[in-house]
Length: 526
Image 1 (tube, rainbow, N blue to C red):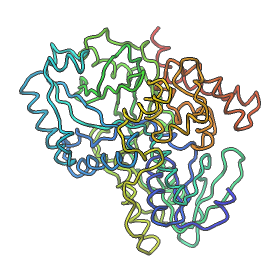
Image 2 (image 1 turned 180 degrees about the vertical axis):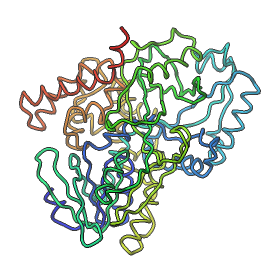
Image 3 (image 1 turned 90 degrees about the vertical axis):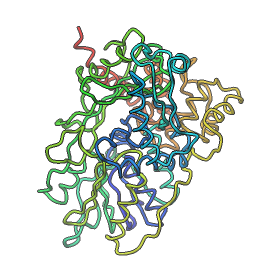
Image 4 (image 1 turned 120 degrees about the vertical axis):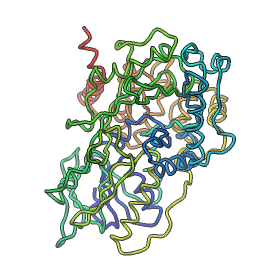
């Protein structure tokens, strides 16, 4: 806080999600003096609640969003270059009931691949009944005897945010979590910085800057109201729900697209020991932007198509072991529902010069940052030069594929499933993480002791929730041990952060309450 209040910055960014992180990296790499403040934890909101895909949005072609699809489809390779562990190529399977349907799907995917400049090696494939029996045996071949399989990329959204932020810090940016903005500073008719209040100590600090970017996602209008009390309603918040079931109950091997009864597309997303299904897309009129409600109707909506697509006993409400929800900050379009609204970002400048950005997709964070920096350059009245390329960010500096990298980690004596999980979180920093402690926190488990100190000392975790939900993703991806993890993880964090017994117990109770809140919809099943 002393450093933030002790110098003048070229740019202060409000919001530590993927948009703010991308702007911070771009600006710092261009030589600007950058500060970023986040009200909660980094990636605490929407940026940790996505479908975990780096993708161009095939369905947006049908909406006429050709420019958006071209941009984000091509950005997939840029993110893969930056962080190959956080942009893993996977097959996305689109089931077809007939050969004619398959041909129609292939035509659309072919256009998508052309827009995305996909290489020949990654072009789509067709699988017939025999191929499905080997590659996706639980898919109902009586209903869907054909599929088209094309390449998309799986990510870990919160860890991507952290890596981008660390890259910004490496280029000189100052970043701080738990430091919400409570006011703006005026010099005449221009905003000259922000007033922040520490969420831990309650102390205030003024951060002076020549430009201010509001990248707070669903909260952008609240921040804009500090500048203009009569700021127009620009957002149409949309709630997205994902549910998680044990992989034993839904043993899929690839990403799968299903069609719902209302003709929407949702994803089945295997990851480690769990499989996620999502997402919903409904207008959100509530106020819980950080942890929006998960309703039983949302869960039933996602469960319903499974029995049509997979030859298994369909999972029910009680089979859901975890769930997450997030709010998309869509830019409102008159007369359109959430499912019809463009995902293209919008940037505007307020009366005092605050630059606000909303909308956009996780995949396009780099190009969004370039757009915002054009506005920053105009605000500063000078040229900023070219933006940074897709150079490797922390964890992304390795050349082998992920399986090869995991095999090399396993060769050191690490259990292979554990190695697979770690390299997809930490990339080439897996070794340093293990060097801090390679023993599992839970006997036979997949989360190791070294991850606790790495989370605190490198990745800025300040609470047990930070560690469980956003540093290790244990809450959703290692559901079998997520309860047993709490006590040993909290004990190690207590040693690192100086918690007493009361604080340690409170941290455990807080995450237990969060777990219960995720699954509250099960209480109404009787």
